[in-house]
Amino acid sequence: MYVKEVLVQNKAGLRGRPATFFIQKANEYKSTVWVEKDERRISGKSLLGVLSLGVVGGTTIKIIADGPDEKDATEGIVALVESGFTGM
Image 1: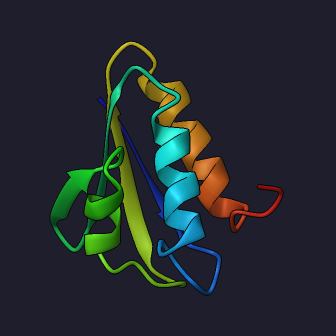
Image 2: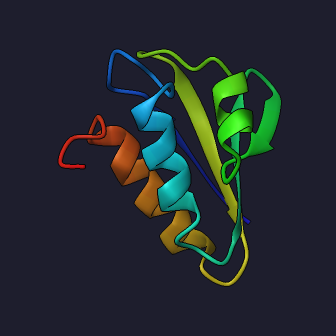
């Protein structure tokens, strides 16, 4: 299991297009991916799950991955969130 905290940079947070980009990125990996906010953990591969967290810009979340490519998954998703979802 690999865990990393990241600050959500964009104003919209994980809603709308950024949430879609997030789950698309998570689904590129074989590992199980979770997102955690305020002790609530959901699947990072589920659009409804990600939206249900209500993550807004300026919020710190945890990205957690477990599986054969867990480090790559976590680092890739963290890089996407840190970029503010630019270049998509």
